[in-house]
Length: 180
Ligand code: IMP
Ligand code: MG
Image (cartoon, rainbow, N blue to C red; front, side, top):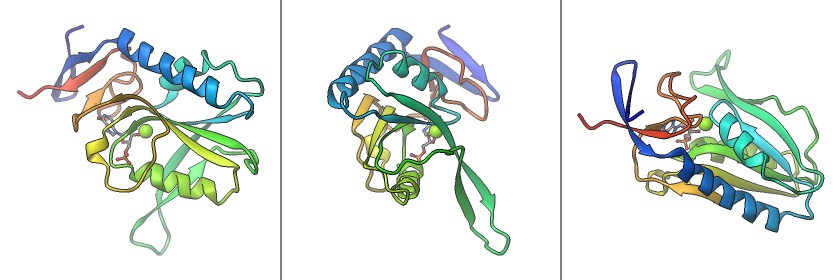
């Protein structure tokens, strides 16, 4: 498909599936080389990372590899005005573990910065970050991306797990918001 319409917006074909596959393959090669003796726990951030996680993990050959799925849920605190975020789904001890966060996209970096803070409090050996897509120019806080698939400009994209208001996650290619 050259174009897709999601809700009120048009999106144009931007990066083909084969190019994203190649980028993920390169990430897997690097991770396999770097973490071969680590028994890593891959922590996939739902919802957006479901496809990236599947594509990457099929190529991870490290003995003792584990994968778990977590979500940052927002809820309004009883007495607070601001939103509180809570990590849900992590029901195993990560003390002393090498944790590799799998994220679909790093944009401002705020969610990752928050997530890493929550995980650090659980005393892992180390936390590494693997992002399928990364907008370095959008970063508003300090986040180190250890493994990066493809760097983008500050464009809004859908597909490959990423959505526009709930739609578009299922496309194997990446689509960019149309200018018109
Ligand atoms: P951050 O906290 O600004 O880094 O937000 C990252 C999250 O926002 C990602 O995990 C995505 O779920 C979402 N996001 C950021 N950029 C895009 C985009 O271009 N398309 C769809 N979702 C995006
Ligand atoms: Mg996400």
